[in-house]
Image (cartoon, rainbow, N blue to C red; front, side):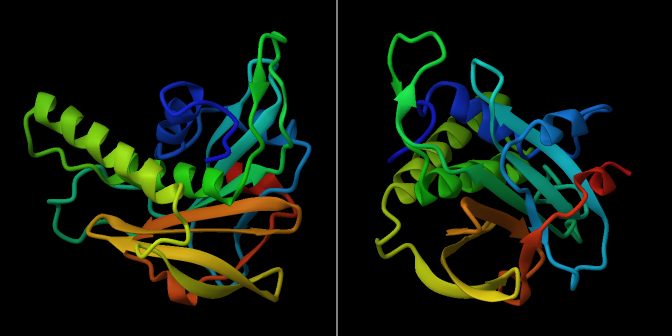
Length: 218
């Protein structure tokens, strides 16, 4: 898979951060530093919108981030009436390039990058809490490894094609479901897009450029 960082390093951590219930105060500054447009659900979504987290390289360049829609993700699947949410992941299109410390190369980003961040984000936002901590970590490690493998095989049987509007234009996505929710990934508008959610059907969603990212901070 072409990704900006390794599976065991910064990208994995960033993927897990993305699933947080919201960004800390002042986090909008990270979004404003990005040199690419942010995407969210389009105007058909009338519910709450909120910032999550951005992921940046060692040199501070923002490479990806997520915006939340609906209720903040619940970490407890056993709670009756689990909250409904959709997170939209925007990944900058980056070519292969030298690392910030000039000691190696960073691979180009791709649709698989968005699929990985969305898949790991779903796990981090919905993992079951009613099990032993040690077993829970093993479960998370196993499921995260599986999410990585699935993201690296977008033409495999785990994925189906789904066409959704992006800025009003029909756009193809790779889509899969699991017992924890759903994940999709594609490309549009000069970026790679991913999304994940639970309780909100992906089939009725549409995406658009966020004209004012600061509106998500209120």
